[in-house]
Amino acid sequence: MKAKDIMELVTCDYMCLMPDETIKEAVNKFRRTKLEHYHEGVKGLPVMDEAGDLVGMVAVKDILRAVVPTYMTKALSEFTWEGWLDASVKKVGDTKVKEIMTTHLITVSEDAPLMECANLFLQYNLQRLPVKNNEGRLVGVIYLRNIYYAIVRILLDEENGHDQ
Amino acid sequence: MTNELAPASQVFVMDSSFWVATTLFFVALAIIVSEKIHKTIVAVFAASLMIIFKIVHQHEAFHVEELGVDWNVVFLLINMMIIINLMRPTGFFEYVAIKSAKAGRGEPMRIMIIFSVVTAVLSALLDNVTTVLLLAPVVLLISDALEIDPVPFLIVQALAANIGGTATLIGDPPNIMIASKAGLSFMDFIYHLAPAVLVMMGVFLLVIKMFFGKKLKTREELKERIMSMNELDAIKDPTMIRKSLFVLGVVLAGFALHGIFHYQPATIAFFGAGLLLLISGTENPEKVLAEVEWPTIFFFIGLFIMVGGIVKVGFVGLLSGKMLELTQGNLFATSMTLLWFSAFASAIVDNIPYVATMNPLVIDMAKQLWPHETGMALLQHPDLMPIWWSLALGACLGGNGSPIGASANVIVVATAEKAGRKISFMRFVAYGLPVMILTVAISMVYVWLRYYVLQI
Image (cartoon, rainbow over the protein chains, first blue to last red):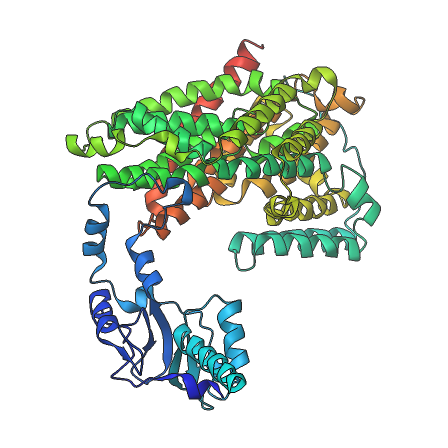
């Protein structure tokens, strides 16, 4: 199996965000996106520009980073007050996707073997991995769940084989 | 105070190595100031070229103090960084900051004053970069809690750090460099600079009270946010806090006594770092050592060799001769000129390369003035002392003149920008330059009164 066999297909109008959308709109898309076979709702989506090129990714962590002030350190964790999160969330709701997206992206080719994908997930602590075709265009996203289900399939099929 | 001009101590010719070294130095300095390439890379490469072109020999660069690396400065910095790196994650700084905010009872003006004092003291005893790096986030937190503009707070904090750092040998890199070159002790700095800094701090606090007193307002219910914080929550590792405060106490006592026991400050810091590493029980010295700010250390190493090059070819001697000509050997005029020139120069360029260049210049000037003196008798000639103090005061306080004048300023501006509160160049200058001029003016009166009128 290759990357393209387990990825979720991405199209411009589905499974993807635009740079000028707001955090509010992004969160709404997260909620409405259905992954094939598995689940409703995602915690991250790729960002594509007008030309259809991949320009970034936005995930829950990026939204948290927008909500929690940058100066908060581990040592300051306890020094917060009631209602601060609410106020901060309301403040950042209209922030644009392009301001919070991650732009240093790890991507994989659609023909990459699954071991390459699995290794990337591990090495870079990824939750999702954009997949590009030979022309360098975004064609899909592998979610951690996709690769996990691929492992489950192999494992359970093999065990079935031994049992029979 | 006027002295006969002695002939230059060294005869030199403007041969090709003179021009190579001087060009190399100023091209490198221009690139450092332009910030096109990281200053450490420029300094290291330029230093290596000084050796490759045989301006200075490797032996001189590494083993001759006048022409190469001042290891006393390098090891003092490395070891203080190790001590501070071990202290940083304990939560001690955050504890002190939150406690200060509560001591100010959530009143912005009072908090600003207390924070300024705490920042100045910590900057004097540790270093201003760490102090500002760890306290700036707390300032932002407190401002958010009180719903006030953090920018004046942050700028005031950087200014206080630079003023406080002026007071001690370890407070600011220019002082470390001057101390090493002139053989001055920790107590010399306390005795000669701390009184001036105390006066400056008093005036500084008065000025910020007058300036911000009416402007900083918050609501009663917001003060409650501060008062309900428990500063003990900041403490992540109480055992380590005790250990590091103990070692810090030992190190400060060691600094206070190093002149008596004839230890160099670097030896005291080396002992402190070794002791804290030992009793911290860390099994991972790699991490602690990797966190040493190596770019800063290598910047110093590179600079020392770069400056060694222009010292050896006689450029610095030429400059010092010109300076004496300019002030006609009048040392009072020299020290006043040096004070103001250093302040403005340090506001524009990094004060570290500035002092690295000025140190040999002052020494060369001394050689021209007192050709028969050598060693400590020359370096600490009674008439030379006000010159050293003027250089230290000018270089340290000049850092307040612009956002790029001192590392503490750079950090404050960067922290604010990351938090979405951009401090423009001019906004910093609007606060910093008047404070710089005020504190340098106080220094001027201080140097004049203490060394030329009262002569104590």
